[in-house]
Image (tube, rainbow, N blue to C red; front, top):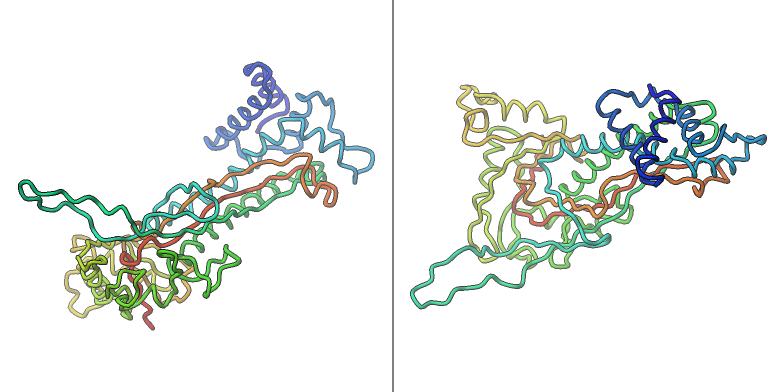
Length: 401
């Protein structure tokens, strides 16, 4: 637990250390407290927000907290809070409750995407699938071939996603630290769940809930060469009539149930994948994505030495020591609990950030200051988008069972 005197000394020593530059000093105090929380030296719930405010205001020259005679009048308190280190320090405390749950969920989903950085905040173009351009034989005095300057492109629609938390005068006065931490933790957990749903809906080629404007007729989970691909065209047994998908058969859809034979059926789709010139490409599926209803079956299929679903319990080609083993990712956000996916998701699904997840503080100018008695606010924010860069690295089964 951090005591008021310790906090005052910590703030004052950092102000002195940084030559009176309070902006830098206040940020450093916040980082130091965050480090102590992450190392387990301080429990965030043990920090009294009222005690913290009193320490911050004391360092800022306020002998006491200006609660005011009229408890509905928070203007003086807002001014004092904004002039102190309170917004800087609490930003790190609140961020520690919001960002880690998001990162934990993202790590669980790591086999399903590859991450990148966008230079734009609206629509980013990235390289799409194109014909292979490896080395070729050049005879003596022959001419070397250059790579094709034109490359297919994929559009990734990006957006900004935010949630604000207001801190009321009453919450500080009554020292409702636990409730404040709970609210921040709830935002972080919901934030992580939204990322999972966003990625699964992208993989499944369904409208993303985070994108309020997206519908089945305006789907942007796969946009090849300026054409928005529909779910029906994306997962299909034949793409040979679609110019924007390379005019090749390339079946990435099957109806097999999740079983030893079902995995074989899906696995055998990948050796038949070709580029737009009909040349075979190498696809090595690494991950299976299933609904919790199929989690036990997926585990048995990928962890059993013998084929659990056959009478003679023969050697399992998909289990330990088999010809190919898979990561299994389970998500309750899969739309139909009998659907399942296999593939090398990292080569196909791209998650781009133009603004990494962050938390900022808003002090005396908080928009709700006058209407909701808000002293200050915190805002969680992320700028991101996701889309398919290809269609040949994931196979989908809409098995009925």
